[in-house]
Image (cartoon, rainbow, N blue to C red):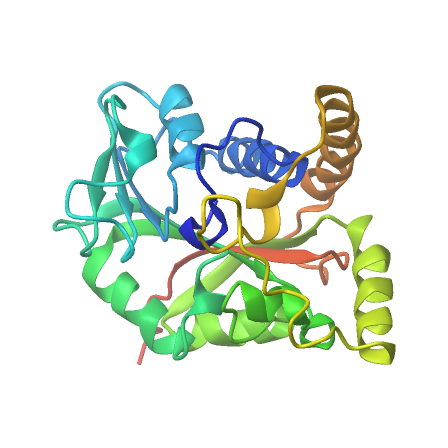
Length: 266
């Protein structure tokens, strides 16, 4: 979860977040990197919940570092008592066999330069990068503005960014296909009836800014379980359709698995 979305103590995770974490854990296993990568960097790790799920399935000796520019000096509050994970507000030293940038670069104004900086400074020789982003600029909405997104990406657009940063895309796909029509309808409704300028100016009871996005999930256990099951089935389709050659099936998110592009023979 992005720190901007977090509101106080999170007692129940959003079904989207649970399904997303399960998908990416299964994906890195399917790609053969889960057991073979000895060092991991989670860029824009937020409250580190995903990193904790990853830590639980990594070999004990594997290094796992979380980097988020919004961390306080002593790391995120949610990480108290967590073992086996490093936290830093600065890019950690050393290089990593695997770099995760899950829903990160849409927050960066110069996305290509940022990805190139991480690849050049943090990716080990032979290492890999996994990137996910919100899909399709036509779906850009107040939701994106609230989360401080600069843009959304088509599959071709994110591929261009990654290749421009020196990466070669080896596998890619869409994610949350079933949510795409719902978001399209939401965006259409928003454009036909724009929200009042003060409609999002709520303040929480403790006087803080309100949470945004998945940090405001208030569904009960039954609803959470049901939606998690539905989204889980959706992500299993995504995993089955992950491809090296064909255009990805459209989804609310898009992802790409990459390695550094090696210079060709002269």
